[in-house]
Image (cartoon, rainbow, N blue to C red; front, top):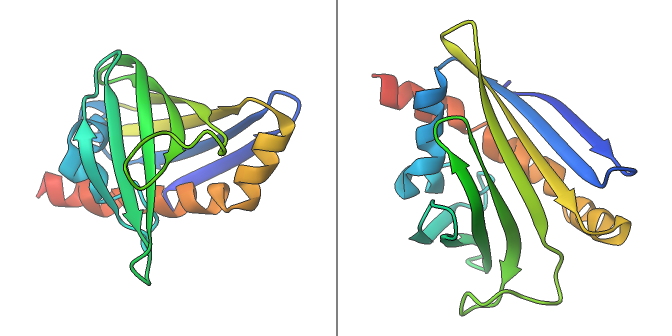
Length: 165
Protein backbone atom coordinates (compact mmCIF):
# COMPACT_ATOMS: atom_id res chain seq x y z
CA UNK A 1 0.00 0.00 0.00
CA UNK A 2 1.28 3.43 -0.94
CA UNK A 3 -0.31 5.49 1.85
CA UNK A 4 1.58 4.86 5.08
CA UNK A 5 -0.06 7.40 7.42
CA UNK A 6 -3.06 9.72 7.74
CA UNK A 7 -3.22 12.27 10.53
CA UNK A 8 -6.19 14.54 11.31
CA UNK A 9 -5.35 17.42 13.62
CA UNK A 10 -8.52 19.40 14.48
CA UNK A 11 -6.56 21.86 16.62
CA UNK A 12 -4.21 22.79 13.76
CA UNK A 13 -7.02 22.36 11.17
CA UNK A 14 -4.90 19.97 9.10
CA UNK A 15 -5.24 16.62 7.36
CA UNK A 16 -1.85 15.13 6.50
CA UNK A 17 -1.45 12.11 4.24
CA UNK A 18 1.95 10.45 3.90
CA UNK A 19 2.82 8.02 1.11
CA UNK A 20 5.99 6.18 0.14
CA UNK A 21 7.11 5.38 -3.40
CA UNK A 22 9.96 3.25 -4.72
CA UNK A 23 11.28 5.97 -7.02
CA UNK A 24 13.50 9.03 -6.55
CA UNK A 25 11.89 12.48 -6.01
CA UNK A 26 12.69 13.57 -9.58
CA UNK A 27 10.55 10.73 -10.94
CA UNK A 28 7.74 11.21 -8.39
CA UNK A 29 7.66 14.95 -9.17
CA UNK A 30 6.53 14.12 -12.71
CA UNK A 31 3.13 12.93 -11.40
CA UNK A 32 2.48 16.59 -10.50
CA UNK A 33 4.38 18.26 -13.35
CA UNK A 34 2.77 16.56 -16.35
CA UNK A 35 -0.99 17.19 -16.80
CA UNK A 36 -1.63 13.88 -18.58
CA UNK A 37 0.10 12.02 -15.75
CA UNK A 38 -1.77 14.06 -13.12
CA UNK A 39 -5.02 12.91 -14.77
CA UNK A 40 -4.06 9.29 -14.16
CA UNK A 41 -4.15 9.64 -10.39
CA UNK A 42 -5.64 12.93 -9.11
CA UNK A 43 -9.16 11.55 -8.91
CA UNK A 44 -10.03 8.33 -7.08
CA UNK A 45 -10.33 5.33 -9.44
CA UNK A 46 -14.10 5.74 -9.89
CA UNK A 47 -13.79 9.54 -10.43
CA UNK A 48 -11.01 10.02 -12.98
CA UNK A 49 -9.74 13.55 -13.52
CA UNK A 50 -9.48 15.53 -16.74
CA UNK A 51 -7.03 18.44 -16.52
CA UNK A 52 -8.19 21.46 -18.52
CA UNK A 53 -5.49 24.03 -17.64
CA UNK A 54 -2.12 23.25 -16.08
CA UNK A 55 0.23 26.13 -15.24
CA UNK A 56 2.32 24.71 -12.41
CA UNK A 57 4.25 27.91 -11.69
CA UNK A 58 3.88 30.47 -8.88
CA UNK A 59 0.77 32.50 -9.70
CA UNK A 60 -0.40 29.83 -12.15
CA UNK A 61 -3.63 27.87 -12.13
CA UNK A 62 -4.70 24.29 -12.61
CA UNK A 63 -8.32 23.55 -13.50
CA UNK A 64 -9.84 20.11 -13.80
CA UNK A 65 -12.97 18.05 -13.44
CA UNK A 66 -13.62 14.55 -12.17
CA UNK A 67 -16.18 12.35 -13.89
CA UNK A 68 -18.23 10.02 -11.70
CA UNK A 69 -19.54 6.56 -12.60
CA UNK A 70 -22.88 8.03 -13.75
CA UNK A 71 -21.18 10.66 -15.92
CA UNK A 72 -21.63 13.45 -13.37
CA UNK A 73 -18.80 16.03 -13.33
CA UNK A 74 -17.20 17.72 -10.35
CA UNK A 75 -15.01 20.72 -11.17
CA UNK A 76 -12.04 21.98 -9.19
CA UNK A 77 -9.21 24.49 -9.32
CA UNK A 78 -5.79 25.22 -7.85
CA UNK A 79 -4.08 28.58 -7.42
CA UNK A 80 -0.37 27.78 -7.36
CA UNK A 81 1.46 29.65 -4.59
CA UNK A 82 4.95 28.18 -4.82
CA UNK A 83 6.89 25.49 -6.65
CA UNK A 84 10.22 23.98 -5.60
CA UNK A 85 10.71 21.21 -8.18
CA UNK A 86 11.31 18.37 -7.48
CA UNK A 87 10.88 18.90 -3.73
CA UNK A 88 7.36 20.27 -3.41
CA UNK A 89 4.68 22.81 -4.12
CA UNK A 90 1.93 24.74 -2.40
CA UNK A 91 -1.47 25.62 -3.80
CA UNK A 92 -4.94 26.69 -2.81
CA UNK A 93 -7.50 24.02 -3.77
CA UNK A 94 -11.21 24.50 -4.23
CA UNK A 95 -14.41 23.46 -5.93
CA UNK A 96 -15.74 25.14 -9.07
CA UNK A 97 -18.99 25.46 -10.96
CA UNK A 98 -19.55 23.84 -14.38
CA UNK A 99 -17.76 26.70 -16.13
CA UNK A 100 -14.69 26.39 -13.90
CA UNK A 101 -15.34 29.46 -11.72
CA UNK A 102 -14.56 28.99 -8.00
CA UNK A 103 -17.64 28.01 -6.00
CA UNK A 104 -17.85 30.48 -3.09
CA UNK A 105 -20.26 28.19 -1.25
CA UNK A 106 -17.63 25.47 -0.82
CA UNK A 107 -14.55 25.41 1.40
CA UNK A 108 -11.03 25.83 0.09
CA UNK A 109 -7.84 24.36 1.50
CA UNK A 110 -4.18 25.26 1.35
CA UNK A 111 -2.21 22.22 0.22
CA UNK A 112 1.51 21.75 0.88
CA UNK A 113 3.22 18.88 -0.91
CA UNK A 114 6.69 17.74 0.16
CA UNK A 115 8.79 15.12 -1.61
CA UNK A 116 11.67 13.81 0.50
CA UNK A 117 14.31 11.37 -0.68
CA UNK A 118 14.57 8.23 1.42
CA UNK A 119 17.64 6.09 0.94
CA UNK A 120 18.38 7.42 -2.55
CA UNK A 121 15.87 5.30 -4.47
CA UNK A 122 12.63 6.05 -2.62
CA UNK A 123 10.48 9.09 -1.90
CA UNK A 124 8.18 10.02 0.94
CA UNK A 125 5.37 12.33 -0.22
CA UNK A 126 3.58 14.35 2.43
CA UNK A 127 0.40 16.20 1.49
CA UNK A 128 -0.83 18.56 4.20
CA UNK A 129 -4.21 20.22 3.69
CA UNK A 130 -4.99 23.17 5.96
CA UNK A 131 -8.58 24.27 6.44
CA UNK A 132 -9.96 27.73 7.25
CA UNK A 133 -12.21 26.50 10.05
CA UNK A 134 -13.33 23.44 11.98
CA UNK A 135 -16.60 23.52 10.02
CA UNK A 136 -14.75 23.48 6.67
CA UNK A 137 -12.58 20.59 7.83
CA UNK A 138 -15.58 18.59 9.06
CA UNK A 139 -17.48 19.24 5.82
CA UNK A 140 -14.68 18.07 3.51
CA UNK A 141 -13.76 15.08 5.68
CA UNK A 142 -17.44 14.03 5.78
CA UNK A 143 -17.50 14.28 1.95
CA UNK A 144 -14.80 11.58 1.80
CA UNK A 145 -11.65 13.67 1.40
CA UNK A 146 -9.45 11.28 3.39
CA UNK A 147 -10.61 8.19 1.51
CA UNK A 148 -10.49 9.99 -1.84
CA UNK A 149 -6.91 11.22 -1.56
CA UNK A 150 -5.77 7.84 -0.22
CA UNK A 151 -7.39 6.01 -3.16
CA UNK A 152 -5.93 8.56 -5.59
CA UNK A 153 -2.40 8.20 -4.19
CA UNK A 154 -2.64 4.41 -4.37
CA UNK A 155 -2.71 4.76 -8.19
CA UNK A 156 0.76 6.34 -8.39
CA UNK A 157 2.78 3.12 -8.00
CA UNK A 158 1.54 1.77 -11.34
CA UNK A 159 2.28 5.11 -13.04
CA UNK A 160 5.83 5.07 -11.68
CA UNK A 161 6.26 1.45 -12.80
CA UNK A 162 5.09 2.39 -16.32
CA UNK A 163 7.51 5.31 -16.51
CA UNK A 164 10.42 3.17 -15.30
CA UNK A 165 9.76 0.50 -17.95
